[in-house]
Length: 86
Image (cartoon, rainbow, N blue to C red):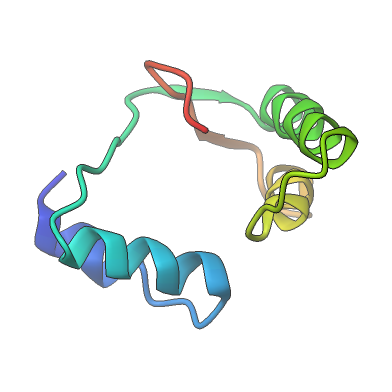
C-alpha cells in the first residue's frame, strides 16, 4: 500500500488513529496485510491480546474497540496479518 493512501485512510480523530498517523509521518514502517480472515477469528485474537494486556497492567490505545469492531453489524471479514502485530 502506498504511504500516501495509508495516510488518507487514517482520518479518525480517535487516539489510535492520531498516534498511527503521527508515527507514519515520522517515518514509521507500516505493516499492511494481504488476504482476509473471518471477523470472529480476529475478534478472538484481539480479545486474547486485551486480556493479556489487562492482566499485566499494560496500557493500550483503543484495543477494546478493536475487539468489538470485527463483529460489528455489517462486518463480515477483515484484513489478516502475514505476521503478528502488537
